[in-house]
Length: 273
Image 1 (cartoon, rainbow, N blue to C red):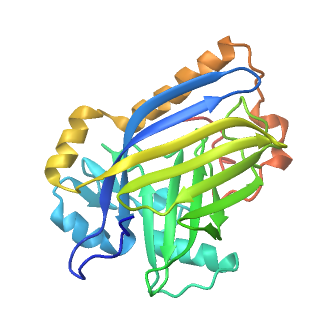
Image 2: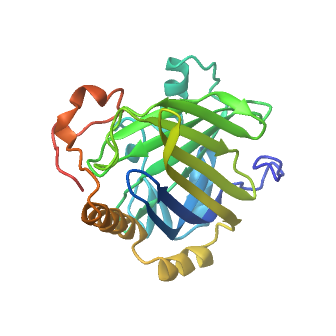
């Protein structure tokens, strides 16, 4: 597998992944959908040179595509890399300031952002993977990070109580099972939901690496128009289909005690996107 940091010192390693997203619910009724997206994979140390290289990408400023630090983890004025390193240190991972942080995420597109999930991969000074974070978001603009430190081969794995309101058709007392492959020429990540020993939802994001160029950004603007808005529309469309299939709806207000350790909440604005 091509490792993202086996490059010459002057070459940027950030890239784009053109992805296939798959969700397959098997209980209490079957429902499956597949759609296509693209995601940015950014070495957070490369943000400034990347934005200088790309006319259509801005850092903390409006552009066709933008990366804003306030969109990730805590909503404050610190850099995303600093927030990531602080978070893993607070959770028992020894990390130095020179560690590399690679982020796979949806950008803001024409100023609009929505991230169902972003993935961080942290590398030590020897460019070896140390840990990963899955940052899950919902349509209430809430986020919850899940730290993965257990590594099996080229993957980080974690099974943990969900304790987060993602879908009104999934209970909060289920388990998430994460399996995140270290990004290289391909992206391959899985997030499944389990009820005890039974897997009731399978989801995956898989994709191939693409070059980070102005031409590619223009092409994806045409191929995937207003992608972040389209993702939100697809979420609501599939929610309607689940409702019509008669799957039980779980209101957000029913179990506030099971919504734990969020890095940002909607207490001041409890309205969906």
